[in-house]
Length: 175
Image (cartoon, rainbow, N blue to C red; front, side, top):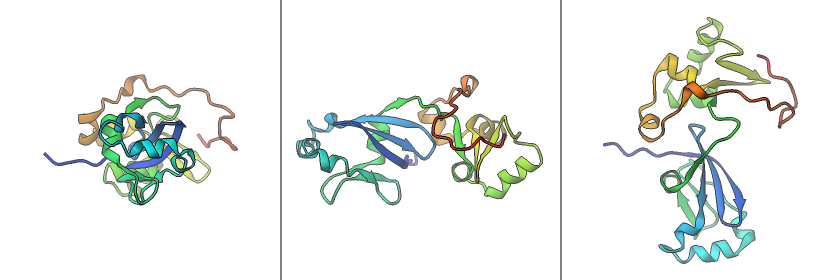
């Protein structure tokens, strides 16, 4: 079996010892750093230094996160031992991310929108210059992703948009 890397797209801090990672496929997981202390006691130094802990960032290619030259963590450690958490953005992908995940050309999705294969306001929506597409529509039109379906069962039947007016948006979407 081929080994799959679950690349981290962004990383944040929940509290003094818990991280939240968003992966390339949109899934978010929290990761409690305390679980490393038994195997790697040196991580105690990282957790006790709050300023150093705040310096966490995604390694350039997304294959891990780093704090400095001594502390880093692989993307798959967070994926394998983190806890999936729901977010208001579950089920949504940027068009650029969807094309990468499904190995498509971005023009393929833009044409699908213009020809009505992906319906504006239902399958896709435009926020300024950024288009987003639902995972449900991508799965319907381009098939399930094997590496995602093996590790996580997307419940596409219950994906419902919630009213998030005023939450982080400066303009209304064009859908």
